[in-house]
Image 1 (cartoon, rainbow, N blue to C red):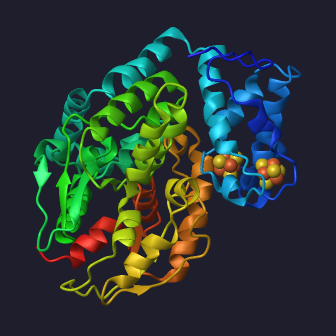
Image 2 (tube, helix red, strand yellow; image 1 turned 90 degrees about the vertical axis):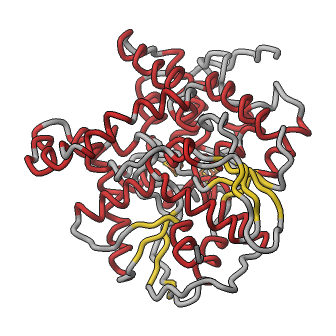
Length: 433
Ligand code: SF4
Ligand code: SF4
């Protein structure tokens, strides 16, 4: 691959494209949609301000300084600004690229870099190691230590993020990757074959949710192939600015899934779906374009897939509940999937769907944002919880593990009684065994 020309004060490797930066015409349409601008009222924490910072660096008028670094990480990468932008500016993606610049231009102290590299380059790309690393957390729950820690309120004495991280931990089960057969056969009249992309967080933390995804797909008439050799989609690496490892993971998953003869590659994790769809751009300079296009066209969120193929509703059990829906940013803004989950919810017999205000406003999770910026994250979450409360719904539906963790924790802390469910759980509940 030819090395790109150096752009101002960006290093040449993994720098933004100048033409992408120039697309911003400073109209400000994005400002009311940006959670960090809404919180701070500060221009530099808005999409327009972030693009202006990047432009100044690209034109050599500004060093890649502390402000640039802070804004790269303070951006939630929620992509709400891209949905609003008449010029198609992708401020969130631009900030992701700037995070890669941070690791090149302002390297972490040695011990921190060592830990980061271990997690990103050794643990996450190795499913066996990743699954083993969760064993202490499962024992912590099963031996009752978690109960003691929570009731002693010991963690309230330490940094807020530790208490929050512990509080967010869902009930852990055996990782699903080890349990799912390579082939789960369709039930009833067969309509096709799909591959299942089982994200790391889903297999480790929401195994029972993804089990429902497979059950629903089988009941809808699809054979489901779950390749055991699949690896992390690379989204955490992208978020932390490690684009080299993202590319290695992308190449691995691309080769693995393109070898399968399937109609679609389905995922129930909005973050994974968005990352998989971005392989096309990520590998554009290294892979055959047509192959990337085919791969991209096969990636489907579970809601997108079921809406396209048509939900078979005969035999579904009634669920007599009032349901509201929080849109994960990586589903509605990054993938443009907004109507499909609502249509599926409404198609379940007995369900009363109640729209919440600002359903597509971020919940404040945004990968590690919720732990790095606990106060800002809490304020964004409070806004969401107020909107949930107004609906008086029995259940809150979403379809991304990051949102699920944040919302379930927030509801519990606020003494709100609604459970959070993944769309697959709701569909699974309506699906006969
Ligand atoms: S990012 Fe888009 S919406 Fe925001 S100021 Fe620039 S052109 Fe306008
Ligand atoms: S991605 Fe979200 S947080 Fe980042 S600039 Fe855009 S709207 Fe603001």
